Length: 160
Image (cartoon, rainbow, N blue to C red; front, side, top):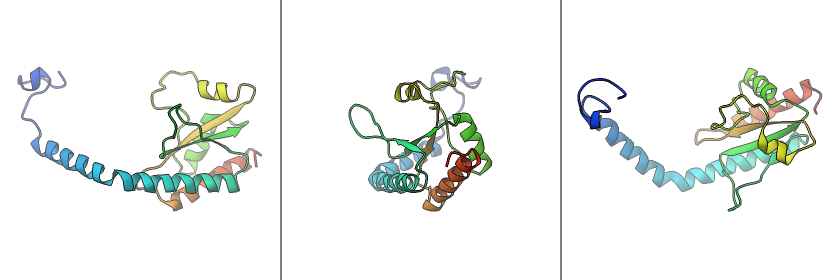
């Protein structure tokens, strides 16, 4: 059991079901379904904006635009590849500048710092990579700040 007590919910939790939370979740689900297409369009626009700025102002950074065999790729993520910089160093440097990125997938929980994907894509190169994510509250101003921070990190480590 999650909590100890009454026998409700097949013995998993005591007390009454949180009807108000269930009701609000249903409304949130309907809202998400109704706004899914417009949210996807907005996020795709942000991805295109960010990636075009990276390509224009940070030519040393590569963008991994590969997707699954079925085609397409997630519009809410950009995978950046930076030659000769460690991924964790990039995360730390960007964090110090107020930018939150990730160097590993959420499902990777071991201590192996070597990315299988990067090893396959760049077998003879030392590269670092970070994932930039977008959401419905992301703004172009935030993405411009990210571009500036990336440029600052590259300059600091003589990569630009």
